[in-house]
Length: 99
Image (cartoon, rainbow, N blue to C red; front, side):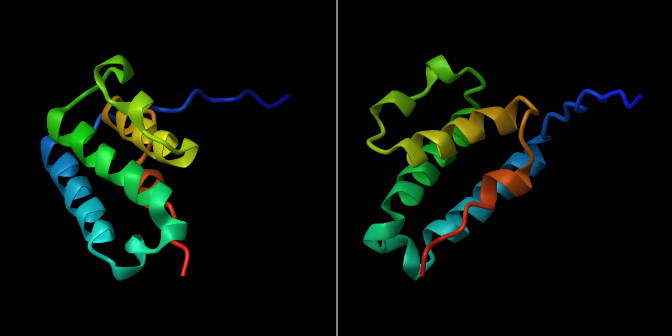
């Protein structure tokens, strides 16, 4: 019988958070982010940067509910999950942009 291991929670360091902010800012500077079909990703990543900069580790302290798209809210929520160790940097910055 196989037992499931609970995932290890790894809270990111300040340096890792800064690196993640830079990675997201790099994504926000890509030309395709301004395409209409990437509007939700842009919305989510802009809020994610705010969450990371403000170190909001409680979803109630964010502006997620004001976002217009489900995908944008999901990306922003991933930023909170990242700060508390429930989501990896790879997952947070890995949302693909449409070409």
